[in-house]
Structure formats: structure tokens, C-alpha cells
Image (cartoon, rainbow, N blue to C red; front, side):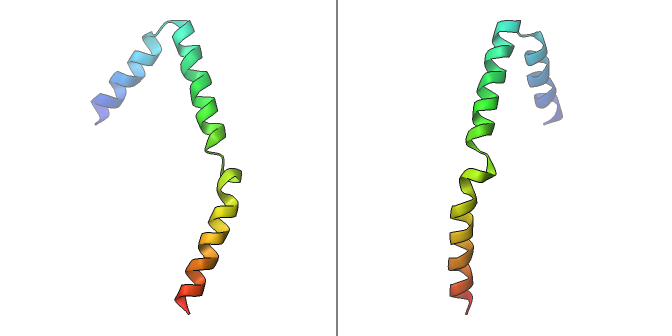
Length: 55
């Protein structure tokens, strides 16, 4: 597992600057889409449902 991760990191380090920039943009877009604020309302509703079934 560690060797696999190190190979991935090495591949990123060795990648051309343009490719690293594309990867960075994609990572930022993914992080923005996965922001907690997008899920909070659904989390609250799921929590409310779970509590109601507990009773």
C-alpha cells in the first residue's frame, strides 16, 4: 500500500506542469462539490428520521 501511494506521488511530482495544473483544478472542483454545506440539510433530515425511529 505504501509503495503504491509513493508511486502515485512520484507520478504527480514527475508530471508536466500543465498536467499538474489540470489535476489541481479537478481536485479543487471535486473538493468544492463535496463541501459539507452541500450535505448539511440532508444530514439533519437523516438524523431527524433516525431519532424518530429510535423511539
